[in-house]
Length: 114
Length: 111
Image (cartoon, rainbow over all chains, first blue to last red; front, top):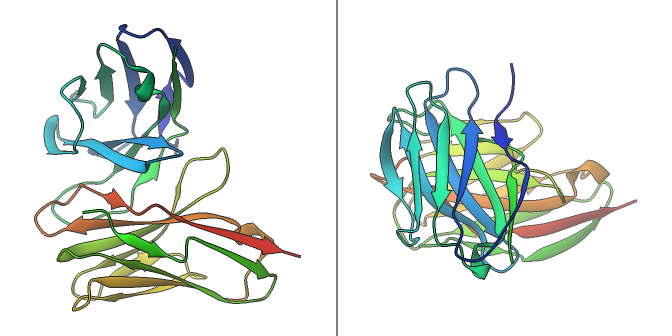
């Protein structure tokens, strides 16, 4: 079974630009979560989508948004990029549903904002 | 509310044991444990659910004290491959899918 894939793997953007990151979950998984990982703050939860609906949202500004498509693929968008947005963005998929399942992480997208 | 992990770092010799702790001030629905090696994505180790159910790898054991909102990960007879940063992630009741991770415990196993 193919794992979680994320594209692109590396990205360099300039302050003020916007960026879209993509995540394809494991086949059959309906939940996709997004995390930001930085050396200083660690792994921080951005949001989680389940069956095309945002079910949970972390404490990030409105510049961070996402969506999920009917095939469970998910995209994350960051508008008006700031230097502090430089990070590894990880997505993770799971079966989802009402009970808790393990999450499978993708390799991440390394975003550098200059 | 971010869970607190302890210790922050630990160095072991092969074959030694270690315990990593995770505590929260909130009522928890579940506790997840993941290991991340340098330059790689976190990998699932164990999930402990309120009510006692556990899912995970055979060689990893963990406990979840629901009354104290604490979990411990037990690494026995450590191997070099155990090296990495261990994260606990907690889900509060009513917020399934919202994993809040601790800052991590860096484990180094030396030969």
